Length: 112
Length: 118
Image 1 (cartoon, helix red, strand yellow):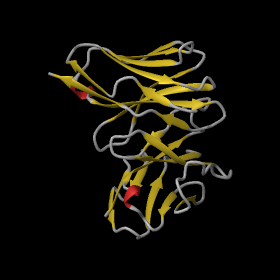
Image 2 (spheres, chains in turn purple, orange):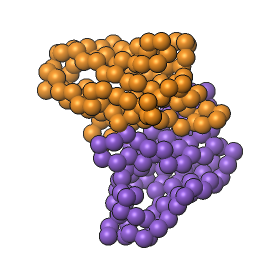
Image 3 (tube, one colour):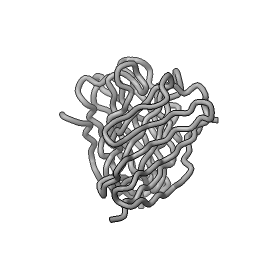
Image 4 (cartoon, chains in turn yellow, brown):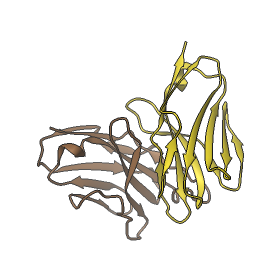
């Protein structure tokens, strides 16, 4: 079936440390992946995306890694800040489906 | 406007009543999506509009749910005879093309409409 899931529902990290949020997907036909950040009471905000012809993409303090062999996606956040505390969702677009399928989310808490 | 606008931001209704939720997408965006987010859960796809094409209604959970998009812009999600399990945040998103599209694949989300059915 179609599913995007997360290994850990919650993650606590010390401020300044790096964090890694993992995501597994099951559909080999997925050609586009995206990470969203959602703060309490707000809509999801785009963080970074990656297409299936890439293995790695970097943004400002964030890196997304895609391993198509094991159908695994990760989001790395460097030098975490209190403002990084939020729920993070991975999502995939299955080729031809034209919609994003979302995972359950991981709550990231940055401890001062 | 600058972003996706949704109204109302909060709606409390009684079981059995009908509700309408409105979404104003970003100007020029051809694709419009509705998702539902239950407490502590991920986003569940409901319906997708693209230009003048027939909408993808595959995610609507029952025939009590319907949506329309007038003039290729504003969309209204209607829930008839609301039930307590309909309580959730209803999120609208728009995109210049479509999810995963050639230029920008991201969806731009609004703040959501929180629906509480008593």
